[in-house]
Image 1 (cartoon, rainbow, N blue to C red):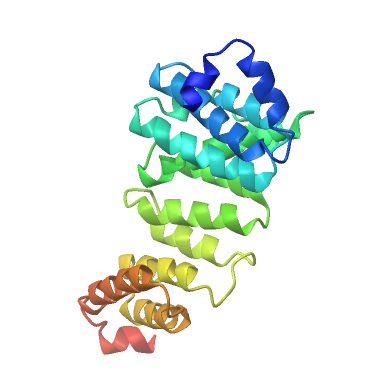
Image 2 (spheres, rainbow, N blue to C red; image 1 turned 90 degrees about the horizontal axis):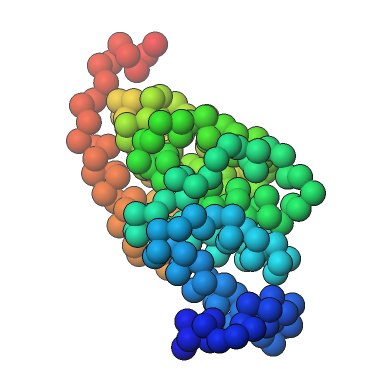
Length: 236
C-alpha cells in the first residue's frame, strides 16, 4: 500500500509535509523507510538519502537510531551495505550545520557496526571515533560493546571489551555488560574472574528474561570447562 502511494504524483511533497503532523508522522516515517528500501533493493547509494529524509523530519535521537538501524541491517541483507557508500568520517566527528543529517549518518555508520562483528578492517579505529562522538550515551556504548563482543577475530578483543565496560556510562550492576566481561575473561583464560563475572550477571538479571538467562547459562558452561589455574598463579 505504501509503495503504491509513493508512486502517485506529488507524493514526495506530501510526505515531506506529513512528517511534521503528529497524526501522520508514524505513517510518514514508515513511508520514508519504504522509500529508502526501494533504493537499497535497486542497488543505489542510500545513506545520504536516508539522512536527508530524517533531517526533513527533524528526527530526534531515538527516531533516527531506530530507522537507521533497520535500514543498515536491511541493506546488509540485500548486499548493499552502507559501508559501500559512506565516504570519509566527518559525520563521526564534525556535526556541521545540519546536526540531524550528521546524526543520521552516524547512526547508519554505527548500525553498520557489524564492522566490529565481522572483524572488518578499520573496525577498531571506527570504534574509537564513535566512542569519542558518543560521549556518555548508554545506547551507543552498549551497541559498541555488543559489536566488540561479536568480533571474535578483532585484535585485543578481550582487552578492549574490559576497557569499554569500565566506562562510567555503564551501571556496575548491568547484567549484560557484566556478561560481556565474563566472555572477555574467559577468552583470556582467567577462569576465576570469568566465573565471578558470570555469577554476578546471573544474580543481577531480572526474572522475565529467559532468553538472556539461557545465554548466560551457556557462557557459564563454557567458563567452567576451562582448566583451573595452577595454585601458584592464583597466589601471585
